[in-house]
Length: 189
Image (cartoon, rainbow, N blue to C red):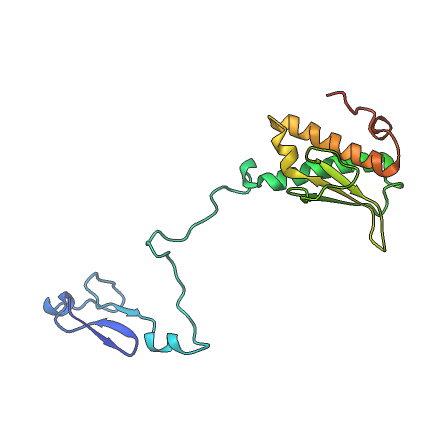
């Protein structure tokens, strides 16, 4: 089909089927042989700074826009790290119900792995958590290490129990009490 490009618009030229048949439909009646006029982005203006860029409706392989692989309502939507953070928050909230006043100002954090230099009191093995006493304006911090804990668990229930035990042990160390005082159900699992 011959076409002519003028001023950033494509229009079908004379001699297209609509003009060959000689039958031109009335303005209120659409017809499939109507000449088509489509907007075309002006390629000359895309090189100028500040010129609007055309919106891409498809990726480079022509597949179209992509959405999330998993809808937000599905459990797999959250990452493993986010689910681990939720377990730590649940354990901390449980402890804060009883010991909130004593833990006021204490920060809880999650890191993937512990630093390679062990603390002087740690002997062998990889720590699952650490407590850092307040120092020079810094509040007391309890850090839970995600990867070492996950590597020791076989299923999600085991993971939840181990996270709770590590949080209880670190809080007990911070407050100078036994883990059984902090959580009466400690060690029952």
